[in-house]
Length: 402
Image 1 (cartoon, rainbow, N blue to C red):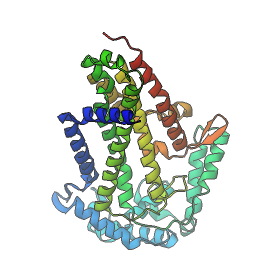
Image 2 (image 1 turned 45 degrees about the vertical axis):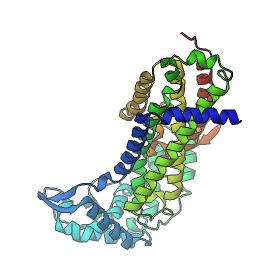
Image 3 (image 1 turned 180 degrees about the vertical axis):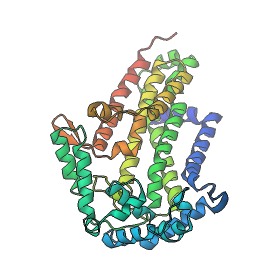
């Protein structure tokens, strides 16, 4: 055991002794923190003049939202929102630039968003035609919209039934709460995950390929522990490095976001952010689940990196391939019309990082079980990582030394 720990320490020293590694780690932390507050940079302009800074705007919106926090989302609050928006005159430019919006409607902007989603309207002026009876039936209308969306998918009958049953477990009525910190975190974590993947690919790529480059592979494999403990130590180093980096950058993302945007909203339903979501979870639970899935997706990415590192003789080639694997899927849109292709595409690490692929309206029938996307993604990430590591082990152990 002591010899294994010493081997792991040695592998960590090889990673961290490089100045480039230290620079990348520092830049990764700074970039993560900076990207958390990126939306607060700059100013908001009205008619060519600075109206407020984005930071001041966020604070103003936060105070407005906190003023409504604790209120039940019912016909009274919905009617207030519609009344507030009725003050906005018809203008050619952005309606948000009007004094009437700033004075009357802005405090209700998030409620207005929920109304538009639930009643499926594109223009806020369409709210004015919603009847009082329809507002009283807000949650019935919402559930009908959710069921319509589910029934219009290409899921089979069992999958649809499961999604419908899950959607009916969502607790109503919703209690409004400010949750800007969590909604910002949900947007930020995708960026954080990509940063984690890139840093891991750069730092882990030389674990095996670096030995080929330094022509130390034959020396390692001929040593006492060369064909067992050293390889195990390298694999453990790669996985543990990924876990530690993921924990650090997730904490940086969470703390930075909450410090600037506010800690409120952990017990608020996810439906305040995604009004038509079928999962009966709070913002805090979704944030925890999202972080765990990103952790295991990152481990899968690192396992693939180590396999490529054991296969290729150039760390640079490994980094290039992993960069393509990480970045390219973000530019590819997969149709939901063929569910099995859509679900398979979401098992690529980069697509695992997107919240909309983790919690959505789909249920998945697999081996006689009906599961949610987040269960499939987590299970695949764990099993695929466990499957890739032995291949990386054998690839380095059995390669032909030159």
